[in-house]
Length: 129
Image (cartoon, rainbow, N blue to C red; front, side, top):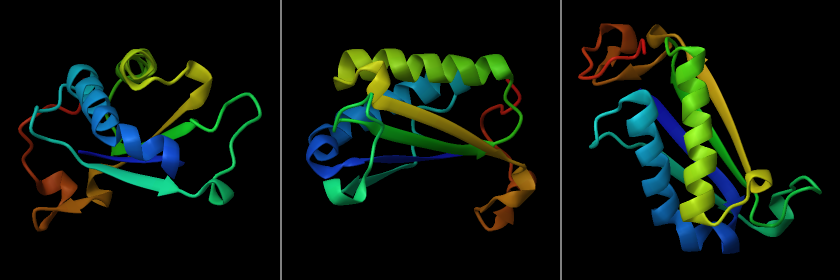
């Protein structure tokens, strides 16, 4: 299970939402071995007055927060991060200093979906990779 939130300044995020979602999804499918039909992305386009970014970045600065079950190896998570930087750069028009990625992991029992705690739901994909 993974939920992904994407934040950025509205005028720079809105035009690439679909492309960015497709790119992020391709990275999740490849790195985390997610099913192709499993996508949960939420976009938060903000006004420039509500979104401060580092001086080393530009107004195209984009934050990607990934919340997912714990269990993936360090190498799997690093692979996801590398793919995000590579593909968002080449397909989403962002430089490495314009992208920030954070991964937060939680135990399966802290999630609830399909009417059950996450550790009681049968998944069609592996988490421990």
